[in-house]
Length: 232
Image (cartoon, rainbow, N blue to C red; front, side, top):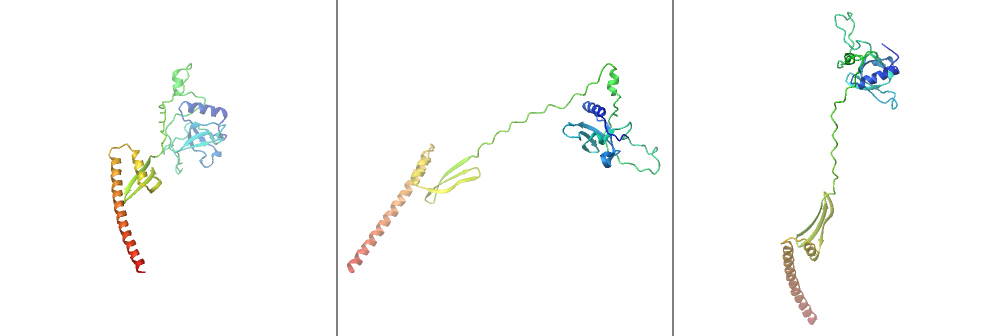
């Protein structure tokens, strides 16, 4: 086990292997702390100019960044389980991360595909098979909430209210009958203006009756007052 970490040449070789789709095995050095001696797989190399910990290693279920001094190239057979028949009696079994079997990474040995192709040919990195990313659907701009203006009649009064969406812009307030008639006149709907005119005619007739009644009562009061003055 190397305790010096990765050299510049080893980092370059690992970067080429990762680009070719392989996951080279590395062993953690003493500078990695408690996991020293454990074996992981390099799954990516980020930009060393951004961070010193640019070697991304898969260890168990985690993928964590490490510095090149924290890992070294794993020797042949590193990470393999020793059969119980070859393990010395009484030796505890060391817990190792569960990793998928990957081809061993040796810097000075070309991959089997390159050897089979011959000395004069070179293995090209595997092309990405990821499907092209679909373009995001354009998000439609949300328009303003609808505006509702209500002209209502009830209990002898005309009221107007306004509301935009769930927001109340104007609570019902009383308007004059003439104003209500002008508002209805702007709505060119058959029957609406006739209905308003009928309501106004009924109110006018009722008001005239009340006025006549009040005039009659006033006349009686004035006659009574005249009698009292003559008696005095």
